[in-house]
Length: 197
Image 1 (cartoon, rainbow, N blue to C red):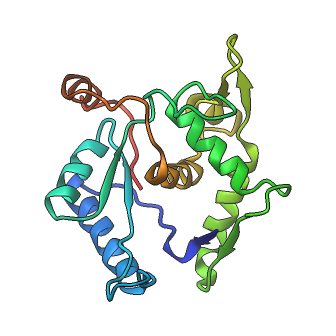
Image 2: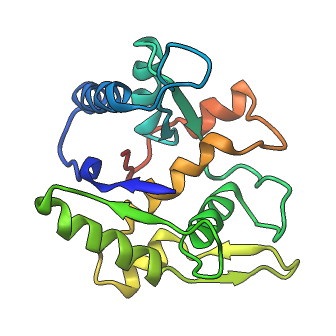
């Protein structure tokens, strides 16, 4: 598996419209270099995974309206039924990241970047992925450290790059239950803190 680190970006202070437009621009860039689908004359469409809680809901809606291949991710939902069992979807996503970088796993990750200006962000991604901790619930489900706990241990720094990488695994997940319209509406209420990549 490859991580195209040339497309790592850290974005602050954008309006929802501007952020959605920037994501659409990146999507178009990736669409242009995406490999061809075997047996057809079309390129494989990239998938944009958006954390749709809080401010991410607006970004998701705009991307969907623009016909971007986007997936709504709600990390508080129940995790897929896999081994090991995970507490919530967020925990399952992070377990996939752990397996991606597991040296005992045959399909280890390869981080590829040509732009040397991305080096600091690549290093930050590696630090965040290696520094996150996990524990088990009383029912022996995997539970990854919360962002609040991570910030406390890291002088207020958040694990946004690791979160963004974890979200990419949502494209292949088969959830046991999809959020209902009412639940989605409650989750979309604005929160004090939010991020979208």
